[in-house]
Each structure stands twice: as C-alpha cells, then as structure tokens.
Image 1 (spheres, rainbow, N blue to C red):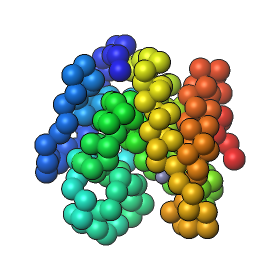
Image 2 (cartoon, rainbow, N blue to C red):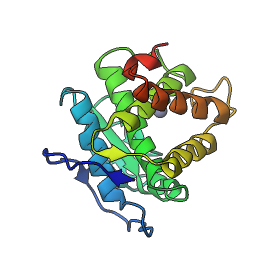
Image 3 (cartoon, protein in one colour):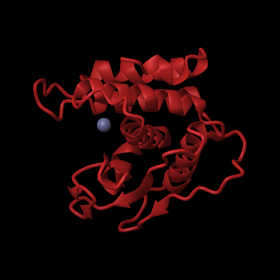
Length: 198
Ligand SMILES: [Zn+2]
C-alpha cells in the first residue's frame, strides 16, 4: 500500500504482542497497516463511536466475549480483536488483505453502534464486506494499487464459505468478492457507505 499523506492524528491502536509479526519485503508491516486503517476509519466516522482495537492476539486467549477463536468485533466491550493467525493468513495475500480484515471488523462495530446491522448471518457479513471496501477506498491516507485490490479480492474469495444455514455463514467466495468490490466502487463513485444499504 502506498501512503498518500500522513494523518495528523496519532493512531491509538493497542498492540498486544504475543507472537512475532510477519515481515514481508516491500509490503507494509502489520503495525503500520493497523495504525493507518484504524486511524483512517476513525476519521471517516468523525472520530465518533470508535471501538477499541486489540491486535495480534493469540487464539484461545480470553476476550470480552469469551475465548478468542478468530478476529471479531465484541459488542459487549465495543472492541475489535485481530488475531495473529489471521494476520499471518492475510500476509499470504498481502498487506491489503489485513487492511480488509480490520475494516470488516470495524464495520461490525459501526453496524452495531449506529444500529443498522441487519440481524446476524450472511447479509450482515456481506454488508460488513461492502463497508470494508468503502473504507479502504475512502481512507484519506492510503492509496490502494491494483495489486492491493487483487489481494483484497483473493482473500475475500478464500474466506468465503458454503455453510448455508449455519450462523457462521459469511457468504460464498463469489458473494464476498462481489460485496467488497462493490464497496470499493462505492468509494470512488461518490456513494460512500450508502452503497452498502440492504
Ligand atoms: Zn464479520
């Protein structure tokens, strides 16, 4: 990812380092991705209803909503958790894939805080993917190049599932790619978050 302009605000993401972070050549370090995405989305929302963000957490540790199984947003303590496992998995695609995970979980925080979360299930998940796409496109200090967009799309495809009927169903690979790409388009055609209305 490329930096467009440094934000004047200081990112306040809380890093809890339990493991080692992957470092990949010319890709941004996870710490930088977390800080830029987190501060960027805060700015988009006018620094309102900002969730806490705890990243690089080990699976199995206790979070506000019980043992942490994967990256998630916990409504009970208004906190986004990003696991070290997910960071490593994201970097198999690239830094933009991590940006997408953070943006997706931040989206859940906003769905909840502003009460437009369409219940639970894949409709909510796909809306979070769409919002993540809008955020990634709108974050003022980040410019996604074509490689980044491919990273996001390939990761979205990878984490899609076919568990129809399960509460954990997040949408099929195709649906997830479509949702996040729709959001990224929404960020450039002026629709913004309204592109994600369901
Ligand atoms: Zn989700």
